[in-house]
Image (cartoon, rainbow, N blue to C red; front, side, top):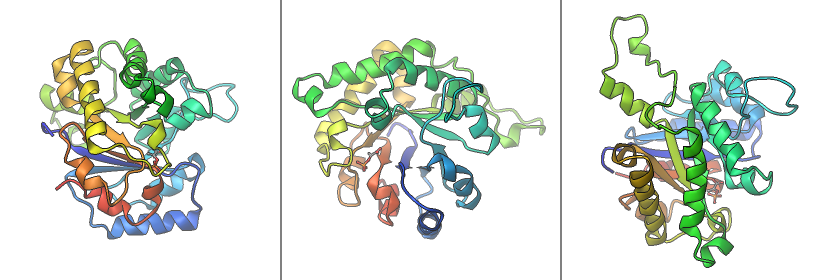
Length: 277
Ligand code: PEP
C-alpha cells in the first residue's frame, strides 16, 4: 500500500509455443485487467519479439535474464541493449532457477541489475531462501545478503542512472517535475521475494510468513538505504501463487504484487492480476 502500485508479473519460464502464447495473450486481452495493477509477462527469449508485437497495451513484456555487458564474445547471451532494441521494458534478474540451476552468484546478479538499470530497463530482482535455509533460521540472513549484493553495486538507489523518458515530455516542452521523475525512478526496481521451497511445489508461504519477510525486507531498506526508498520500493511475493490464495496474500500491507510461474500460463492469471481491489 502507501501508494505503491500493485504489480503482477507472469514468469512463463521455458514454456510455450507461438500458439500457446496467442492463447495466453487472448485471455489477457479479454481480461478485464484491473487498471490499478501493473502487469508484466516474462517470455522466453526466442518469443520476446512475438510477445511484444502481439500483446495488449496494458501488459508489458520482460526478459527472464540478460547479461552484464552490452555486446561481445558471450555466446548464447543477450544484452539489455538488445532488449531495448526490440522494445522490451523489463527484465527479471536473479530468479532462483538462475541462481541454483545456472549457479549465478549474488555478485553476477548485482552486476546484471546495475547494467540493466544503466541501460534503461526496469528490473524485477528476485531474492529468496531455500527450505534448508528457512529451517536453519537463515531466511533474513539470506534475503538481506542477496539484497545487499545489489546495494553494493547501485550504492545510491536515488542516483541510479536510468533513461526515463516519458513520451509526453519528449519534444513537447513539458518536463516531469522532479517529484514525478523521482517517483518513476524509484519504482524501477521491484524486489520479488520468492522462497525457493515455495516455487513450483504447491507449497505457499502463509500470508503471515510472507508478510513477515516482506516487512523485514522493508525494514532492511529503511536501515540500509533510507526511509523514502523503503516506502516506495515494491516487493512482490512469488511461490505457488494461485487464484485461490492470491486475495489473502494481496491483503498483506507489505505485499505489493506477485511474481507468478505456473499459474501465469493459465486463465486464472487474470484473477491473480485482479487480486487487489
Ligand atoms: C516463479 O517461477 O517465479 C514462481 C513463483 O513459480 P510458481 O508460481 O510456479 O511457484
